[in-house]
Image 1 (tube, rainbow, N blue to C red):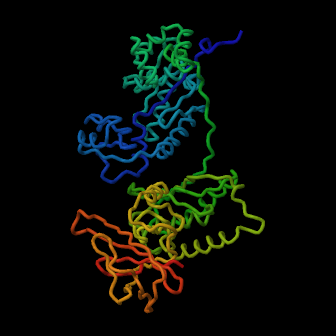
Image 2 (image 1 turned 120 degrees about the vertical axis):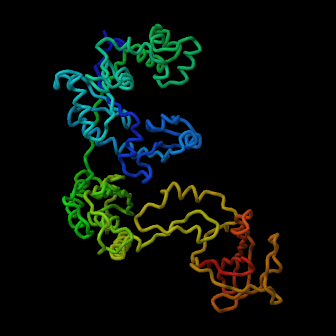
Image 3 (image 1 turned 30 degrees about the vertical axis):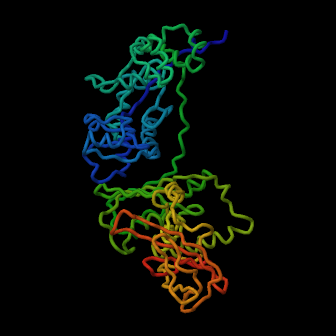
Length: 531
């Protein structure tokens, strides 16, 4: 006879939980502001508190609060935007450390994972002994407040981990005996099921604890609440028959190099990291992958960290990786200058991975894009990272405001999402249609006259004194064959000192060239030309 889900055997499970993991991961990442040390910390997502440390909670900060309310409760609070990538990246060394002691880890999310208890308990002489060894390893990895729960099934083990407290014999470990999971779960509130709608409905029926819910007949629960309700009923009854599914350990593609003693010259560091850069690319090649974005972390002997993500228009080679390491070390100084603090660690992590087959060269090579990239990369290697800039269209009213210069192969400030968001704003006063091809770095002074030789002016109501008849540009007078405008930009009208009013016109001269002119404080200038 086939076994039903409720009759399936329940597996002894060890669950590892790291409280406040997002906060701990943010501190381990080294990306926090300098003034965050020793102060309460909270992570923010969509304007609300996502996670906070114990000091912030002691001041009244909790998950779900608006940032202003949290700062009112804790004036010394440091708030940082939540980044799930930092969470996952910081948890990977923890998973590797656990797998080194106890293979077969299943991560549920960053800060929470499960292991089958049977193997480790036999190897280390018992469940308590295995959990103690695991906590000692986590402390070595910089996770001092981890909790472990062991029970029948992952759900009961997770609740045990969350309820564990410091004990003299087994700190931060709670073990539920075999067969005792239903009694352990019975007094817990329905909220631990993480099903708000089901919990609200059960409360209306007078059911407030897992034991009350688990006591209901299983067939009636399925008929009333469906398959998801039946699954929640099994969890509440302590009959969680889910088994731990070990993850497939990822290929370690990142490379790290430690320097002892620390090095304080860029040329020495670049030479010392050359073989590691080649090994990094060789590892990607063996896996059939290429990377178009890498994150480089530099750590000095004083404990300071510099982390930066670099992009590549095609994919990184060993030379490209070495260039990025050198540019990050160099900063804004000359390449021969010594560093302010000697560097003891360089680490490179691939951020985006693509199949190498998708980047194979064509039959006749990579074409002109490859030659352009090689030329720009060579110039950039000679002039420095900021020596070659790429123009990216951004948001703004005037053309110079819409131009954002980014070093070749770098991420725009705030990322692509910030550029798209700024570009999508209304920006009243912008010129419709295609943008001009030539934008003058310094707008050219011009004169615009009407048919009687008088200067064309615009009043406070954006009315033109007379149609433009001719204008001077580049030391030559041109007849105006067509014009449009004005488009008025009225910035900061409420601030007398910073108020700015600009009128923009499009003109076509007698040679067929089109110009974009601006009139500000009765002074005409050429902003751009349509080529």
